[in-house]
Length: 117
Image: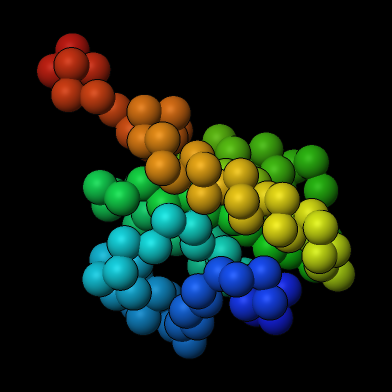
């Protein structure tokens, strides 16, 4: 995954722990997060930040149930392993575009909607 993204011109940051990943997300305003562990927590952490990072979950055996859970929790998409270069690139680019349009982000609520809740 790292090699695919780096060779495609992406700046890639790697975190060894969930806490390190959240710190990077907060400091660098990263628009796309690829989570292969603690993905539920990463979706929650990304949703709390004003940057509206799109979270892509990776799994060795992705199925419709995982995909539905990821989307219902506010994640962007799921990539199954082994990774296909074209699929990784397409999903990462789409997630990046989505993160730049915060109104359409599932976790985003405009101020007017917050006041109505």
